[in-house]
Length: 426
Image (cartoon, rainbow, N blue to C red):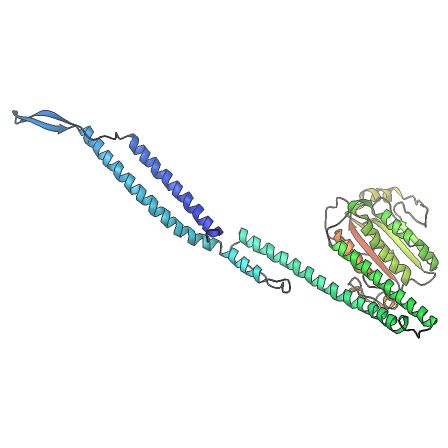
């Protein structure tokens, strides 16, 4: 008990009260003692007369001596009662301090009991402390907020593990079946072995892609960021260069409309991966002879109002009017955007709300055996930078994915929600 904070608070408060009372009583005692001589009263012999007739000598005391004797007696009484009062006050302060400290620390005990009952397997309990809005209630509310985040993190972790185990089970089953039935069978022909090896290779490739996507997803959820100052258009241009050869091989045309000078702070590798994931889907889903359009700019500046980087490896400069040039300098706003538009099959309205979920795959992605993590990683990267991602699509009309990201030294505010590749309504 002596090691509890309740005991320490009781002793502290009682000791402070005892010290204060001792100082007050000691000051009073010292003041009285300064005006009183610590001595017995003195007597003297004087001639006594009665009715003018001498009657002899008597012992007498001066009035000053009587007053001094009374003061000495009063001082002794004050000292005795002060000591009794200090002792009683100390004992009473211990009891009162013990009760009051217990009432003050009652919310702490409630917080302790509740947190002890909360386990990693059940994070639904909350403290929900009632009472005045003081420091203890702020502490309880802070712990409840932390538990909300922990519950969401554990839920996402369990969902990720369940989804990953489900996705890994299929390729592992395929590998085990082909190894047991073909590769380990002495009766299997060379053609069967070759076909089994190709199937195992595809399964391991899918597993490798899944593990890489999971690592990328976990890395963006952690705190190991490498944020630097960067040009968003340059990052998008580097992602385009990575998929230029693949687009040519599939007979696609990639057009770049990138306004330079889009300065922001972020993880350059992560943002390049986000744009690359969008390009990967666009190149994979667009039909031969189709077009993939990659554009970027600041919020509020229409396309064609500033210098545009276009083509595969050269810069073509479109000279803006003086008014548009002024808008490029002063009208950039707090938000930047990168958009990737394709000529793919498009998305139904019901699918657009789920397209950024983990392991969600459309019909084309299921046929291609993709992991369904690409767009989920895109959303994580963008949201970790304080931005948001949006999709605009119609079935049979292709899709446009837009990444809204805060500019350097942005003042804040909600991200725009329109499609910057189309004219906004007046």
